[in-house]
Image (tube, rainbow, N blue to C red; front, side):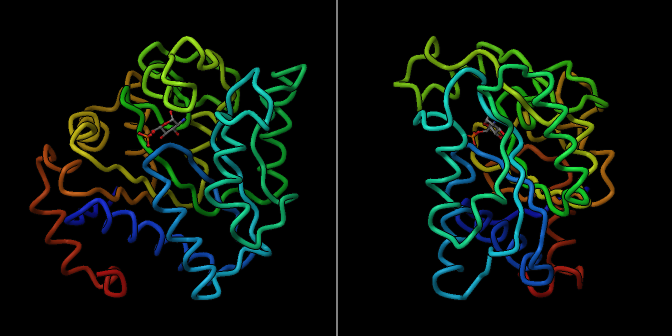
Length: 262
Ligand code: GLP
């Protein structure tokens, strides 16, 4: 894993968007894995800005989201489909037929998950996967004890996750769907490249465990330590408990790979 620390949340968001945009410009038919959550809103806003002002083109891009709630329709204001339409898909020139999320209303959730895996496979696999970090260390909706070899499947959400995600459900954790469909940890690890964005003081402790702690399925994000091309982008707040932060700062300042992103 590589860790890039930027001074502010805005800098971290902007760098993340620039990494995605650079890949999309190099490969217009990019297969892009997407994440939801408050962290990603500014990243999508920056991609929309680049689409409007710098001709960033999504017309050939295909997207696969990490997860979706089960039991609420796509049109529900709290669904991840609504989130994606609002923050990215509607404002850019992506073909809606090229945007994929698992269908949380499918009659047979198991079959739906198998179809989702197949769709990713048939697309040739995900080139770049964007990831955020849940308060309990989840990636996607892979709650603690998710097997590192897990695939797209239906999962139960932990009470802490329901509470954290209640904002879109009137602030009431009881109204958040308790089940979701999520890419598995194994599915995520198959992406060719991963950009893992974590910001804010509240995530500092779990982020340090994810990046530098022992690998454990109790913290799904520690599985990213196995990935050969994973960049963790953080602001100073989220990075504040990393033991190696001086070293990561030095690497970013000196590694020619980052020349165009400093
Ligand atoms: C949800 C999503 C995750 C996301 C997490 C963090 O649980 N399923 O993919 O990373 O939220 O959300 P936030 O950015 O709001 O902290």
